Length: 135
Length: 135
Image: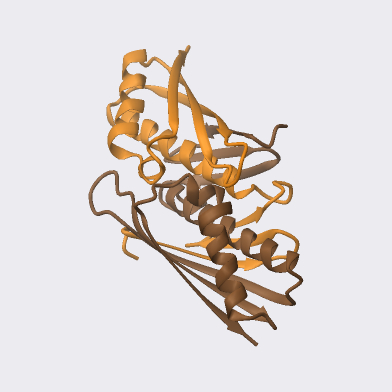
């Protein structure tokens, strides 16, 4: 499979739920966010996951002694249809003996250069990233 | 929880994998797309799911006798970093005695008015939607 291509197939599972497949993965999407994530929740997880993976990749490649990485995302949607994402705050917490500047640099590289998901999103979404190193 | 807000929390699960949570849902994201979807696969599923849910919602609200709805998504990414999505084809297949024009109209309404995920994405992504009614 070309890494340039992405495929997905979805079938209706009743109510406002769809069973999605991509590669070997399956995900039940539920408009209500009950039986599985809503589409916007899945998008939020994909964005945070993309940046989190970049940060781990950059820090471990740089031989920083990372012991834990946690991300939280808080997003705000418009009140009116299509209720798109307007503002997103991503907070990154890294454990281990890592310099705060290295974490900030990794976040910046993800945002500016590597994050496929972020660069597929509207660039006028207000994206604020913060970070913290814990011992 | 305000429907305007979306939250997610992610923790590193080793290698380039993150366990993501949003609401009551959990999703393991894997850069390689093996243990779970890659972030771009998850984004693709969220986009297709958002439009698919809109289409079911619009058709059933209009009392069309829908018996099945399937979506396929084929996306193409850029060759160079950040390897963002460039082109997406979405094909919608609806079963039941539904007029092809009603399916096309539902897709158009999702794309132009309702789809939160699509409207959170770059609008210069080439998005082609097609549909088919099966008996």
